[in-house]
Length: 325
Ligand SMILES: Nc1ncnc2c1ncn2[C@@H]1O[C@H](COP(=O)(O)OP(=O)(O)OP(=O)(O)O)[C@@H](O)[C@H]1O
Image (cartoon, rainbow, N blue to C red; front, side, top):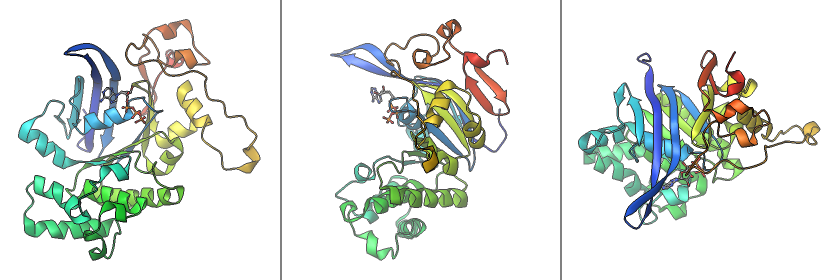
């Protein structure tokens, strides 16, 4: 077991979505299989992978918007995987969610005041305290003077301002953990850094644990303490950010790092190779390493499921290349 600083420990998590035809289940999308990671208080974990690799599913299961098929989610040492009723309500107060698309995340017919008041009402915060909290939340995300924003509707704000409201709403119940799913990917490049910097500041002030879901490895350097790489529903590598970026071990991670655009014009002619092919279907994923059909180092043994190995302190990889090290 981790020390008292451990906020979240996800262990052997599985999430299968049933495929229904008429009234029967005819199969499953095995979106997440055997995923394990830890997060300390005040720490940011970047969950990185390409579209469809299962990142959002992990986030939604951790938030307990979905009940996992199997596995444990220890929050402050307590397994929340199967909570329901009042206990689930208690847990929902401990966690916040910043969705990908601020336009879709905010109800269009509610004012900003009403949007921020909603979670406070649901969780029984008294009326006198509510307006005070709304003011503080808007000040924190620098939507000031607050009076100018309270009675506006989402469509009257810019994309960046809308995402500030989404962040204010996620933090208004003072959660300990926030899942931020591609929080800046829908915004203009000029606003992205601004929003990530603000988020980082708030994270430090409130000692928040954050799961930062992204397909963009380039931003993790500035916005994460550690990284977990997902491929086709599984984690293939996890390590402190500097270690992973400096010494990527899994061939998939190596390919992702090679694909990061390089701002140095001297390197513009370097060919950025990404492995050909596509991830396997998650309905019937093949046994063994799921990356093997695209891997330049594939061997016969890759037909067997690789085991996660700790290569050096806190640097884990799931790949047969490292099995005897
Ligand atoms: N509600 C659902 N029912 C059935 N299958 C789903 C559901 N939600 C996601 N999936 C499937 O689960 C797999 C993982 O999807 P998920 O959205 O978690 O991936 P992702 O890495 O977050 O991708 P993206 O970056 O595109 O959001 C995909 O094959 C997806 O089609």
